[in-house]
Image (cartoon, rainbow, N blue to C red; front, top):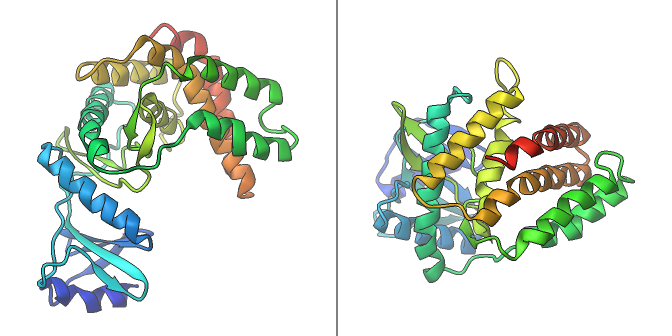
Length: 297
């Protein structure tokens, strides 16, 4: 793939440059640009439109660089190549920093606000987290004879989600919120990347996904309950400094977090990656133990 990208760069007026892979589908050019490779043309064109709308909302996202012929992307061998400027900044390294957690909450809220405009102009997959939980998630757990997550644990979490689900605000969400996709420079938020999983769903999913995801990250010392709950408070406070959470969303945070980890356990059961499924189960139990504290945030 590196050789193909080097052959295509002149189409953008770049005759040579250092090409290095940074993700499975992304390559950095001279530390200043990024080539992202797509195999779904519809998803690519949706993302191009999404980035354009977000830019008009003054949201910091990557600027697309057109080819010399004025094309927004290049087609080659059944793949599509998009070149954009590299955003400044990098992911946060101190995962236990409450100030950064507060800023992350603000960043999620600002993106959600801008997304309201995007969903008026672009069609997105309208997904139901509850339907997933009652569908393939349950099937995968059952195929494993409920060895990782008991049926009683599954029913307790999903029943709570079902009671609140219709009252939870739904809109376009990022769906993959973590410090790798939200960039910071010198302590300040600098940009959003990777909208490939964006979909319409319950809004609070993004907050819960980010907070449970912190528990997966490697840190010098594992999170204590006190540390993680303090970050949860910081993120929700940051979010509410931009736009409010509904009472239903606050009530749903514990069960949404639990359901996210149940979903991951089921996914990894289905893919045969039992080590990761066990990790999701452990985080589910960690959140379960924090449920009472989460309900009074």
